[in-house]
Structure formats: structure tokens, C-alpha cells
Length: 389
Image 1 (cartoon, rainbow, N blue to C red):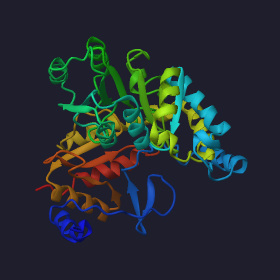
Image 2: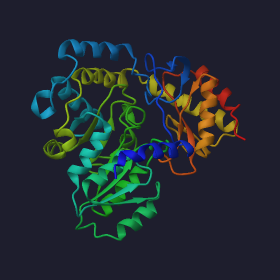
Image 3: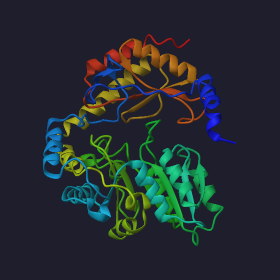
Image 4: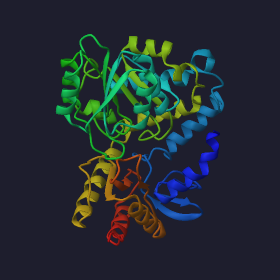
């Protein structure tokens, strides 16, 4: 049977279920006030948490990088695509995160696939938080190790899972997001680190949504908890969220980074990201220290929004990060509310299964240091009029 013949029926089913996804076209810069599908909209959906994607210094550094390095890298890192800009960025990331070394990947998805494929093989054991990012789940599948999920942030369930296996003689990884991308809550990393050491496992943390936002100098969730390299030996992060550029990295020991360079297929067989991006990201890292007001303003907006939204009776999750979901339940209701907001000039996406569990469709609001309080007030006024009945 030709599997392509099933596509029309499968697409029709997704439409009936309210799960059909569509792209919107952004005309112009990634900033709060946008032109979407030809119409103005105030956006609350980007991961540009610090507003660095359009920072004049970052833009200037990108242009400078193009003038020096050209547009593309031209090759994989291990051929001749590894530029001085890439090298300097890896060193700067290692310093920020207080790890001996770091390794750049072209995307967060590739980083997670590469790490799990390289570190685990058939016979190993992986335990993941149920709400981990899809790339971590796919990386576990690719590794051919046995993998299990524990209930979200449920340490007792994790302990029970671990106790059923001989982790002293089985290569074992415990994997968690630092900040969960759809709920916005933070993983109990100190307890996870303690459990990992108790069971002779290694803890892997994907801090894509924590880097730049949390911790001293924006060093992320792991730094916020003061966890050492021996407690979190594998730290993954992205550059396309709070840092405003693109790409990803893994930070850890020199041995870990050397091993990944030799064995992570998504690193070895991928063209390196443009050197100009790395050059621009170096400026983003400088701005983390030079403009701490961005994190301060962002967290003030988060608290302001939460207080006002709760006063409206909206159902929020326990998130004190820029990710502020409003749970609506059914996919159709989330789509209707998102459409209503767009009609009123506000871009807030509806997030539906399978991205989130069935029955937990939501509006996923994200805040940025580029937002002003007046922007948030405009959003709150529209949320107060949502057709929730």
C-alpha cells in the first residue's frame, strides 16, 4: 500500500479533531508589535525573552560577522567549518556556565539527538520527565536504550522506577528540562541531582528556556540552584531563545565534549551554523552582563501579569518564568480563544495535543523584556473578554 494515499484522510481527521496546524507569515522583525499575515498584531508568543533578537548591538555584530566570515560556514565543524567565532563562543559559554568546555550544535533538536545517541546504546536505561521536550524523547528512541517516563516532577515515581533496575551495573541517564516549555514550571533539579548520585546515574538537563532568564548573569536554572558539574554533568541549552540568535550547545567536562565531537552524529554530519551567528551571539552574552535590567524588567512583568490574570479568574499554572499558559481544556475552545484574540490584534497561539496532554489545550502566553506594561494591560483587557462559556 502506498502510504501517501492515506494523507488526505489523515489531514481531514486532524481538521475534525481541531489539531490541524497552520503557519502565519511574519513580515518584519521579531518584536512585540508585528505584521502577521499582512495585519498588525501585538505578539505574546515568541521565545525572545530578553528582546535581544533586534538589539542594535546584536544586529551590528551580525553584519560585522558577515563581512568577516561571509554568510555560510561552508562545511561541517570537523571539516573546515569551525571558525574563530564558533571557537570563541564555545569558550564564552563554558565561562558563563562554569563548565570546562562547550560544544556548538546547529539547533537544540540536533543537540538533544546527538547527546542521547552518543551517550547511550542498547542495554542502557533512560528515565525522562513526562513533559520533556519532544527532541529529548526522540533522542531516547534513537539511542536504542530502554527508556521510561516518570510523572511530571514526581520524585517518588522516579525513585520507584529506578529501584526496579540494577542501575549500579546499567548505564543510566535521568533527563529533565530545566524549565518546561509548555507549562513554564521549573524542574526540582537539586533533588534530581541527589537521586541521580544515589543511583549512580548521570543527570542531563536541557535548560533551553532557563538560559538567559534565570540564575546569576542569566546562567540558567542549574546556576540558580548552584549545582556543580559533578551534579549536572551534561548541560544543554539553546541560543535562539533568550540570547536572540540561533543554534545550541552542550556544556560539560573536556572529556564529554571530546567524546561528543567524535561520536555525536548530528554534530559530525551537519554543516556548521553561520559564523556570523556565533559572532552575534558573543555580543548577546556580553549584554547579559551589561544590561541586567532586561531580566529585572521581565520578571516584574511576569509578576504583574500573574497578579492581574488571577484577579480575572483565569486558570494559570504554577509558573514564574516567561511562559504563562492559560488552560482551557478542549482544543476547539483554545482555537476559538486564540482566534478571538487575533481578531482583537493579539497573537497568542493555541497549543493542543499532542504537544500537550489530552484535555489540557491552552493559550501559551510568553512575555519578553521587549514588552511594556501597556502591552500587558492591552492583553489583560482582551483576556477579560474571552468567550469562555
